[in-house]
Amino acid sequence: QVQVVESGGGLVQAGGSLRLSCVASTRTFNSGSMGWFRQAPGKAREFVAAINWSGTQTYYGDSVKGRFTISRDGAKNTVYLQMNNLETEDTAVYYCTSGNLAGRALRPYPDFSWGQGTQVTVSS
Image (cartoon, rainbow, N blue to C red; front, side, top):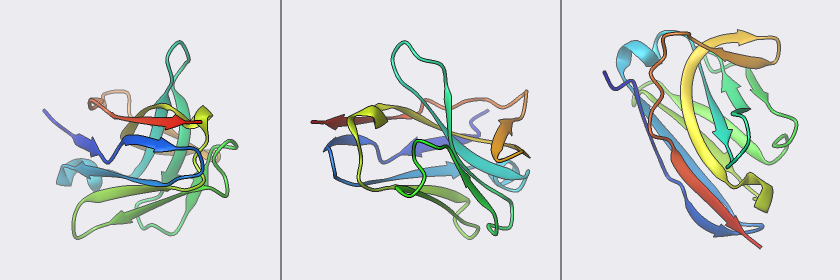
């Protein structure tokens, strides 16, 4: 069962911008908070950003604060991640997920079925 489909990744130069999209099933989108994680080669999956169900609360990982913005569109069952001033360290596969807010991060639901993600590559 496909719960989310991520898109919008690509190759961009350092300092550039990209906007990622995550189209979720209605059930997934309405299940609670949504967020983004990323995983670079050889590294653990890292929390990037989260937004609560109503869109009134947002949280960010320390490495992306001030550069990335998460938002959601209920009419389209879509979560966005606007990424500005990209750095080479942002290179990773970005994944969208749903879960519960935990502190100032997101804890994915244990039974969440991860999508394929979208590759973001930032060149120097």
